[in-house]
Image: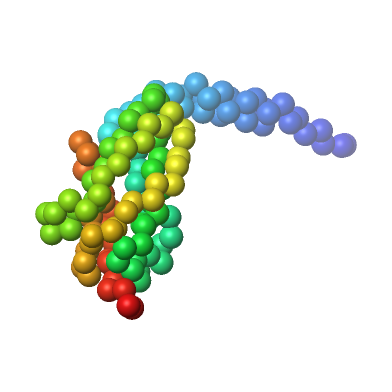
Length: 138
């Protein structure tokens, strides 16, 4: 006599598992995120970085501008001002206004800097980059 296999039970089990996963994901994910103090939503931020990574490794010749990339992801229009200092002395300063999602390359003047380290910082934040200033060949 032929054996007839019923597949209905397996499909109900699969459907049940998928339904439980869909409905339980929200509460479970909130609990898991609470344990790690995290969130799925992106956090607003600003960033400042050297355009060319080699400038971090090698340095910039004194007097040449230092190109930095300034990014605004705060969710609103933001005015950034920065200062470039060396051993506490002001070398240059500047300001740019960026809309949300905008990134621009700013050329930071190193005119007046000597061989050593130049610190470029966004005023009112803890954001900064440091670049080595090399003695010019002349």
